[in-house]
Amino acid sequence: MCLAAVSGWAAPLDLGHNRLNEPTIAERLKSVARKVPSFCPNTSLVLFIVQRIPHLVVIGGGHSHAIALDHWARQQDASRPPTRITLISNTVYAPYSGILPGHIAGFYPWNDCYIDTLALAQGAGVNFLLDRAVSLDLKRRIVELDSERSIAYDFLSIDTGCTPGRSGVRGGKYAIPAKPVPELLTAWYDILEQVRQSPTQPIALTIVGGGAGGVELALTMSARLTKLLERAELLTINLIQRGDRLLPGHNAMVRRILESILRDRGVQIYRGETAIEIEPTRNVRCASGLEVPGDHVIWVTNAQPASWLSYCGLETDDRGFVVVDETLRSVSHPEVFASGDVAVLRDRQLPRAGVYAVRQGKPLFDNWRATLAGESSFTRYDPPDKVLALIGTGDGRAVASWGNWGIGAYSWLWWIKDAIDRRFMAKFDRFSE
Ligand SMILES: Cc1cc2nc3c(=O)[nH]c(=O)nc-3n(C[C@H](O)[C@H](O)[C@H](O)COP(=O)(O)OP(=O)(O)OC[C@H]3O[C@@H](n4cnc5c(N)ncnc54)[C@H](O)[C@@H]3O)c2cc1C
View 1: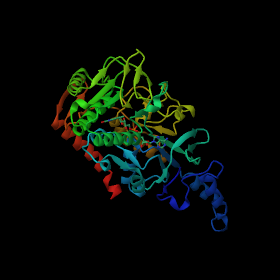
View 2: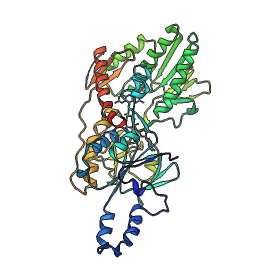
View 3: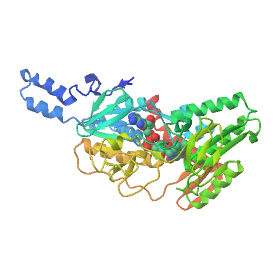
View 4: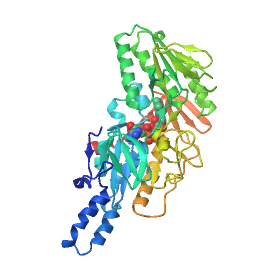
């Protein structure tokens, strides 16, 4: 499906996409150039210039790409290397992870949660294709799209995020995945509607995955549903965690604070349990034989990248993440950049969090620029040793986690989180005005 091809400065040539057997941009321009001799004495010069205009294809409107395109938009036309950029995104509205839990808790309207990638592309002067990349031909440098079209590139940048893995789980289709976000929100709005219609009926949600995402969802969903139900006791929230500890990526202080809030909210925590089956009734069966009954199952387990990334021949780790060097270029194909959740640094493991994806945006932009300008010096992405995480508790408070230190939950931490997230989103307001 390709509904939109909105163009920047390359638009009049309509070269944003090619069918496999169609001539590539260079071939088309060469054929134009062959007609030039009658009025241009130096055909080879024209061919040379034409062939030097590189095409950067950017897949996914994730956080790093949003920041890199924002930088691209800020750059004066004159200082841009001559290039064409095409953004392929499977959605116009790319959700911002920082605000998503606040939206589920009812603090932000949907309009505040997403980046309008179409407006961003227009503002940055790049082509926009509403489509989904499904495969890569690394040899021929072609991206295959869901619409059965294909697009040729000279350089590629991938920021397509991850989805929670349900492979190997019987009845996985009965679970609501936390990503893609539109799928989560569609199901969440249905649950809200069900509770609004029947506020006296009991309801049970089972959240599978006790990392930061799962814990934050348990807290925000419980806060929102409790307000809608006639009595708090009508709500049951189950949280199933494979390991012995919740929030394994956070320190002991933060774990203690959040576990005590979960207990106060009546969340049933099942540790050391691996969900292996979801029955059509939405009962979750675990490897130990435990059965957890519920009305809806929300799946927030370890994220996995799309499988086409490893099938195509890019070097990936054993879980399928694209391995990149410190300049965010693939270690096997340096013409391919990867960033955000889909990428893994060659020599360092980072947690999968939006904050890292955001911070990769500027070095990614620098390195697009360097590549497109044919330069050989690149900017390193040096991840900080620790980052501040502010985890919302769904009631207007947040818990701060930084290295081995943690405090909360306090409303002033929520104000700080709110201010940081709003400031981030305000960067993109100018594109939609
Ligand atoms: C419930 C939940 C809460 C979270 N809360 C936080 C939080 O508070 N703070 C935080 O830092 N992190 C949070 N995270 C983690 C955060 O969501 C991710 O780390 C972050 O979104 C990663 O950003 P990204 O740029 O890698 O990709 P994404 O934000 O996932 O963006 C990828 C984009 O690419 C598009 N796309 C995907 N595949 C294709 C394709 N084949 N073709 C074209 N387009 C494609 C997608 O539609 C999407 O727009 C949370 C995660 C979950 C599940």
